[in-house]
Amino acid sequence: MISGPPLPLRTPGGPRLVPAGRTSTVRTARPDLKRSADRVLCGSAGASSAAPGAPALAAVDGSAATDWSPVRLPATLTVPVAGRAPVRGATIVWGRQWPAVTTPNVHPRPKPVITRRATRYELLGSINGRSWSRLATVTLRSGTTDRLAFAARRLRDIRVRILSASDNQVPLLEELTVTG
Image (cartoon, rainbow, N blue to C red):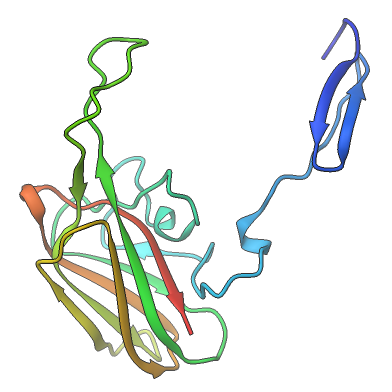
């Protein structure tokens, strides 16, 4: 703020007044610093391809507002697993496509909302990043959330290999979580 009366600011530490010509710094929440059982949260991620605006990192950023979407199928998403403890489960949340906005400043129609999910995919694990073992195979499920359980294993990396998707559209992988 360059001029004018002090700007009231509400922060987690309480209210502040920022005088004209001064700045204020407010710490933001960082999901990568929160305690979490998710072993891939805010880690790095790589993919065989990614559509513009839908990078691999979006699949592990902890936000429902972002998705990873490959350009074509088959496609893979590979994520390193943090820590040395064994992992025994993964949850995949698939994204949804909302109706298009047809007129500026007008809410889109409420329906149809389309779940863009994989109809066939594999969850793979690796201890060295070169050889992979199948942890789970998923075929023809519905809904937005898949909870997968498997025998406890120490893994360096985990990979989602998408083989096919619904409605001949590439899926939107909203979030991958991996737990011990």
